[in-house]
Length: 70
Image 1: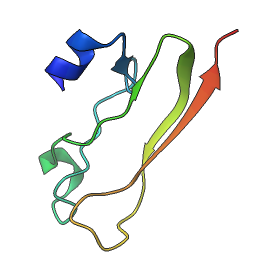
Image 2 (image 1 turned 90 degrees about the vertical axis):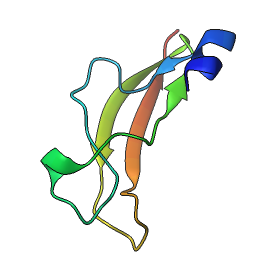
Image 3 (image 1 turned 45 degrees about the horizontal axis):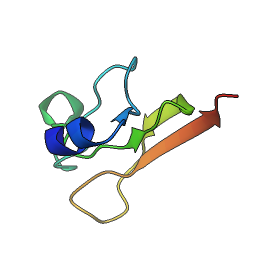
Image 4 (image 1 turned 120 degrees about the vertical axis):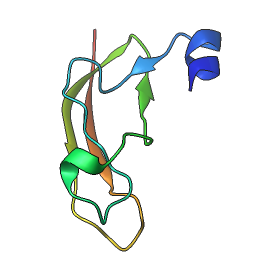
């Protein structure tokens, strides 16, 4: 993660949002960790970030909406 964000002009799509753990899904929220990430360039902003219900993986799915910055 650090190598990618240092090498490319990318930022966390979750910047400005409260931390939300998505792994492991079987644990309750305060015990989950954030190891799933989404990155975006400065041309986009995150308008919505949400962790969804389990779909059978050991990670919870993420739903992230982006908006183009003109």
